[in-house]
Image 1 (cartoon, rainbow, N blue to C red):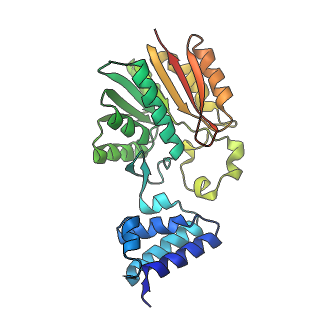
Image 2: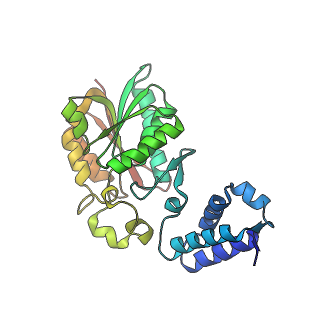
Image 3: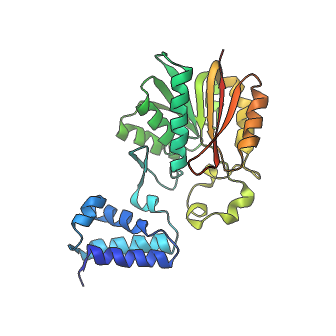
Length: 288
């Protein structure tokens, strides 16, 4: 039986709803399988869907609804700051909250380093490369290096940089250790480190818990392990005038700010809130 786009979408939306999943996922998946965008989807509203395409689409709908596979891994990409980034199970799926971190970094860099022709930036734990690539493309004065402990993640980040035309250098290693080993110092450190408390694992959606890399999700028993390490390692890599910027978990602002304030008593530390009113970013600025 040949089904048209409207009928296929109606079935998928109903199936996803019955399994507690977002109905919009049906549109994303169908756009992917029909190789079109949302406008093209509705322009073909009454057109029949080839049986082979329908079967592949229906299989992905079931994988998302029943097996909890993230839609982004099924279609192979996620949009971030207006650009498509390749993703797979080796990397965290970029979130809208991280776009706010990038915007905050760009705004503070413009103020702190006004007139500078070159600003050295490192994105620590780059994953898909979303932060590093976006910063490099949004401000040509930024000389961006990205690090990750996962070679598989660096491969994805490198491919995203190549596809999107971003000049980013990549280093394999644990947190800031690649820079420390080279004796390098930088103007800006930015990171969206693992910050979910291990004790909260059971509360996560299976879409996240069962598929996204745990090395990119969990930050120790209380979620703060990586911020403690940053507080120890940042003094070894930051220049006298510098910016450190971190995404944090909601409710972690005060604790992370205290760690940075202790490490840099002369600096300005601020907690910033996201569009949902949750503490989501911490910035440390010091000026010589």
